[in-house]
Length: 214
Image 1 (cartoon, rainbow, N blue to C red):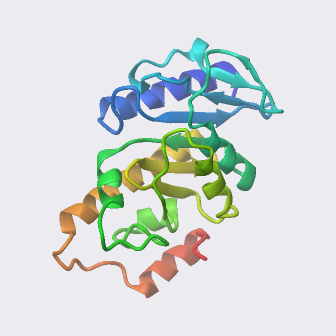
Image 2 (spheres, rainbow, N blue to C red):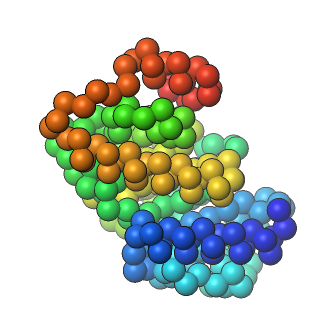
């Protein structure tokens, strides 16, 4: 994909998420790998509802900002995924309501945050790790992601929001949407003893779609 097209796609997908209420105000950030190994990143203080393709932060393959506005302060999160998951082509971080709410629940498993409610959540996300609370922009967020050694494509920062890496922009956005919808389902069903996928059913999905479940 040409850089011009990628710039447009970033802004279009960000606007779609904003319009559907997945992140509001100037929250959230998004990045994607360019053909030459660089990155396009949403600028700091920008709104997903009004990103300008020409003003996206442009990094070269060495990680040097070469054009555009100053990047999001959450760059440590993005950099950590690109460094530890070699196939990462895009990263999305939102402050989506249901994922944030679920991160505050007292009885969740931090190693496997989302209950196995649907096959698509297993397929697109694998196990989702809950990370501790960090002050926004703290480089320690990136260190926490690096500490996972590339074993997770999706995490949720406690009391903050989810971060998802994908092979390309579409994959990252779709996985992020699946995470938010699964968190919403989990909240709706909490305390109701729903029929979740059995361990055998999860294994079938994991095996068929080669999901990282270790």
